[in-house]
Length: 221
Image (cartoon, rainbow, N blue to C red):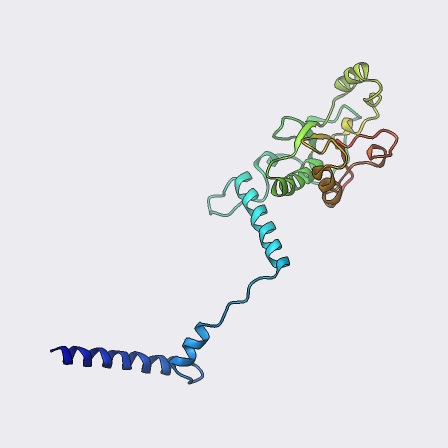
């Protein structure tokens, strides 16, 4: 009985090996297939690993910050941009009197002109992917009454009413590290924000006429 079982096992193994040899495209048989299976898989280079990390980090942020459509795909535009006029636009009205329909409300409660808000959304996502938290915002659009009140309290810091880019809805004030020259957050912004159309204007940079590292303006794509 034991001899019969052994014979059956041997026959099964022989059939399996024979099948593998037939299925081998180059006719080299099961031994060659086994050798190929043992070949090492090339590892990604350092640059490739870094790109993978950045892509996965950004995809994770996008997945968490944007709602999923019914098809299961991930939307690349945050929900708060819905209904905003995000196409490039010439501001209507005057400084501090921008029409409400031209403005877009950020999650922080501040407002920007629609196209500036869309550009800020892209920069916000990239910043969050890099630092693990959203940018800290302390100011956006200011209507004329707000700018007048601020100027009355801080005439040496606030711009004269009717002259600030905050009044056009294309300026934003930041905190969370960006408000100080030399921090990792400020350096990252200077290196990456221009690609999204945002800059720390020359007068606000270190050595400028009125250094304000926290002040950033949208200048367009």
